[in-house]
Amino acid sequence: MITVKAPAKINLTLDILGKRPDGYHNVAMVMQTVSLYDTVKVDFAAGEGDTIAVTCPNYPDVPCDESNIVCKAARAFYKHTEVKPRPLSIDVDKIVPTGAGLAGGSSDGAAVVLALNQMYETHLTMDEMAEICARFGSDVPFCLRGGTMLATETGTTLKKLASMPKCFIVICKPDISVSTAEAYARCDARPAKGFLYTDELIKRLYSHDIRGLSTCLYNEFEQVMELEEINEIKRAMLREKALGASMSGSGSAVYAIFNNEKKAQNCANILKEKYNKVFLTQPTKIGCFIE
Image 1: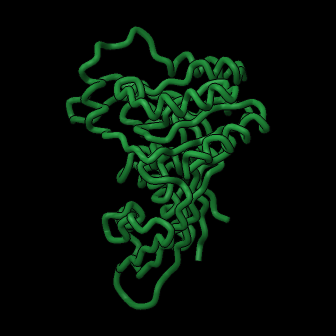
Image 2: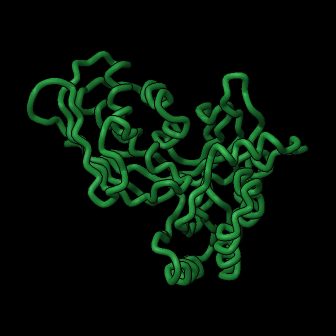
């Protein structure tokens, strides 16, 4: 059995550049992995054939059939490598909230590709595994690689950036959900911006300026959806001396950056009085890894 830690990600920026002829959108965003993990265990099962048994005991609403991204990951791995499939069991101990914009599912899928590469001794390079990952989700190649990266085009073209300075990141996931389709539609209806927050944030990364970086956090989905609960959480974070706060991805998780662990812990404690899913994390320099 192979056990993989699958990290959550946050979006430091998310700029929508416009709709493509193929229906997808071009984006520019800086993504960052954080120390909040699902644990994915992959093992060969008894019998013949290519059956995949998925369990996710602490998230009963997550489908455990072929629609689960971990199954799509295994199928994509088999198609790319042409190895003979064997029955698999995949157990996902989910800690990263679903429907949060934290790429928990994408990271679980990347974890399966990483595990199968070792189990089948296929010796795929990181680039080859990332190519497989891109077939079943735009965030998946990033979750495999991790760290601090610029994502462009549809989100699968990645460029490594200077690492995010050491800090403490509080993440809060409210019960509300955000319609990604509606968010994209509202972005399409807006006039183009004159500049990209992503460009400005990258400059702050290379100057290792955590305070300056925190003033450049931006999420276009957050701007167009204007959800009061998101704003309420951000206000609470900023009252506790966060350097900056933003929604991650398509939401609805909100995160805040602190340069002081005690202030971050105080913020998390206050948010836990109202919200069940609150986490204190730090930026990491890698993506999925085998324990």
